[in-house]
Length: 240
Image (cartoon, rainbow, N blue to C red; front, side, top):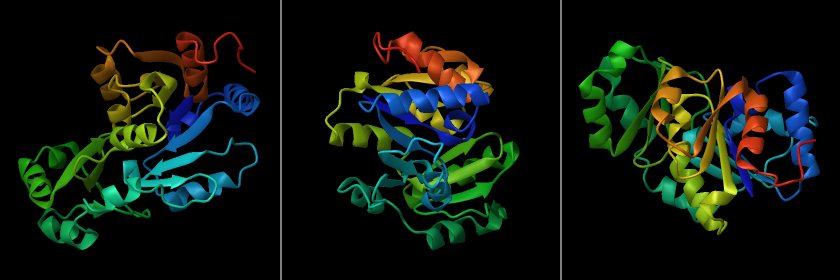
């Protein structure tokens, strides 16, 4: 089985007791493979790999789905990474095309994506979408301030599906977890999923119709623990 989880607000969030319980449960069940699926760059994930309190991931999907690596070696997962690379037009092309909008670039490492701060009013400008489509990109807007240009068809959900297929897993063997709209693509019903407590309202509204997506009460890791019980993810073995 595979637990595919967002980091900030999800796998790194919640009550300290819930975090400890989840991390101990994963450690006690080696049959659970773990994938970090995050909007962070791989560079900003690296410090987490040195934290002895955190379970180490088997796989890392970073840059909102644009980067896929093995957790132990940090080497690209091929041919999945090459397929994403072929879709990206390049940072300079994106930056040049939207220069007149004067958007502030996010000061974080970015690979195969361009990320900006953007107001809801700016994000609603149809010209941004037209530019993205002309470049062969998708736009992803979340938390009412973050705008990402991504390779066409690439997001957390598409990259996770590619990984699941590559691992030859059934979708029912996967549990996804998230808390913001950039997690929607992996919480759209193709997998079992949980919106942890305190999730972005837009994500909750967008997933209400999905019978395979559970809305937890507890924040962060507590919500994932609730989902383990709700979906019987560990069978009768229980939680540490």
